[in-house]
Length: 564
Ligand SMILES: *[C@@H]1O[C@H](CO)[C@@H](O)[C@H](O)[C@H]1NC(C)=O
Ligand SMILES: *[C@@H]1O[C@H](CO)[C@@H](O)[C@H](O)[C@H]1NC(C)=O
Ligand SMILES: *[C@@H]1O[C@H](CO)[C@@H](O)[C@H](O)[C@H]1NC(C)=O
Ligand SMILES: *[C@@H]1O[C@H](CO)[C@@H](O)[C@H](O)[C@H]1NC(C)=O
Ligand SMILES: *[C@@H]1O[C@H](CO)[C@@H](O)[C@H](O)[C@H]1NC(C)=O
Ligand SMILES: *[C@@H]1O[C@H](CO)[C@@H](O)[C@H](O)[C@H]1NC(C)=O
Ligand SMILES: *[C@@H]1O[C@H](CO)[C@@H](O)[C@H](O)[C@H]1NC(C)=O
Ligand SMILES: *[C@@H]1O[C@H](CO)[C@@H](O)[C@H](O)[C@H]1NC(C)=O
Image 1 (cartoon, rainbow, N blue to C red):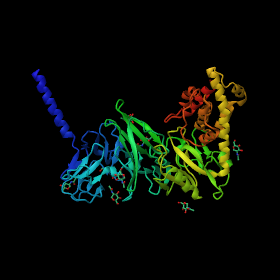
Image 2 (cartoon, rainbow, N blue to C red):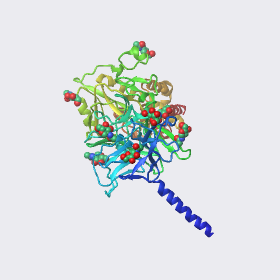
Image 3 (cartoon, rainbow, N blue to C red):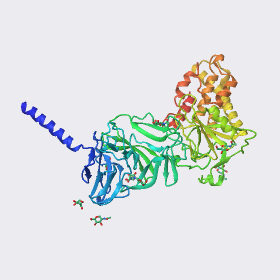
């Protein structure tokens, strides 16, 4: 019993001392870090030391930071990316000038920081966030960093990092891929914010845009599916007079997640750690599908992964070169079917659930509302489209305007993805579409009424039964779908039709309000007797986020609808 107790005490001491001796996370001016030694952050998450990416050719040594508990030592930051050290002779130290210097013993530096602040007691510390910081040991505020590795990211974005631009100094923090798996020097694949661009993140290949996230619209990026409900991380995009950057944080301290660029595959990947299998799981990848590739469908094209061909012209446009378009050569893009006539009046039509077109030198206004935005765009004949800048909160806010061709639009299926874009078309173009919608609703209304009648065996609208046989609702619906592919719009028409056949005439909308409902995207009231019986089933299939089967679910709900 006593032996056991002493044994326990001794063990505690051993553990305490072994911990204390291995978890050194700082070096001061009189100290240095040589190859073979490591700093380990206070919580044990990260380690700083020397490594070789290619163990078969271990002569090339780099100073880097890696996950301490990852058996594969996944490296997240490299100091001397372009200057490897030949052999194990590297030393890291703090010079009297306050510079952090990495050198081969007694020779010139292979890497150093530029910070010129000289302080009495400089301390280099590896924080548990993976950030290597230089600070004044006498400064009581540990948040005051004279230098930090998070300002000079390699290929990996960690929680708490800001990827973007400080507008006061033009200081640009961007990720750049390793050239190759065994060569950490910067490749030409980079990820960051473009200064002359709009509030969004851009993956560049050399000087070419490769993938854009689309405008930041308050809740997320217009070109990225909503991932806010994920259990692992939160993200934010800050865009004000002084800064513009993307950042993310973990929902719990026990989680691990990182974003990394891969030059070979030309992608930006997010991984999250699976503690059970002790491996990194791929969470997301950008570009993630064909339509993510920048400008794939050419000017005024709309890339829709659920259609064949994936490249479609925006409503009101036709292929510029139809023959080439038919051979999947989309670079020519699309042109207006009917020429615009700004003086006699153009119209704006709504393109729903799309990724915003690319803007260079954007015209954006944070407080304008949508009505003012439309007026502003109408006034300027070269304004081709406008949208809200922030879609959160009922009416949305802010204004973005596009001049010239609309490039890089991608179609989403779900209401929670993308944004509404209002594009300028010839006034004569819009008449037709409105008429088609009214016609559809008129055909559907009596048919639904009849179906409801059948369903309740309560044939209070007997007259409409005959119309069921004549009207052929499925033909009308499928014709509409074939022409527009717009499932939510069709469901909306059915919804409006249900409102038209409510039991009590005073609850039915007037013809003029039906036209209004068809022309807007305002929320509709729920139908009462007898339509509500239908309402719950078919309409739960409004496309939902992160649901790859959304379109097939809609088809099922439509056929369910007919079967009844
Ligand atoms: C690295 O050092 C080894 C041994 O000192 C030497 O043989 C080799 O040539 C060096 N390599 C380079 C690239 O300098
Ligand atoms: C580096 O210089 C110091 C003093 O200048 C000397 O004692 C040491 O032997 C040198 N080390 C090497 C590897 O040349
Ligand atoms: C130091 O400044 C030079 C020149 O501005 C720059 O090329 C280098 O990347 C900087 N080094 C670090 C570690 O920031
Ligand atoms: C990039 O991806 C390739 C293929 O999956 C992989 O072999 C390589 O290690 C990755 N490169 C880096 C730098 O992680
Ligand atoms: C910009 O946003 C950052 C982060 O929220 C904040 O610290 C900074 O004060 C803001 N600047 C202005 C001018 O609002
Ligand atoms: C380590 O690398 C091996 C080989 O590439 C791989 O099979 C394994 O899943 C990796 N482990 C982790 C923790 O990533
Ligand atoms: C392109 O294909 C469509 C559909 O098959 C066809 O109607 C059209 O005539 C074709 N246009 C040209 C120029 O080949
Ligand atoms: C329309 O807007 C563009 C871009 O802001 C501007 O260059 C042009 O002067 C404007 N034209 C008119 C007539 O206001």
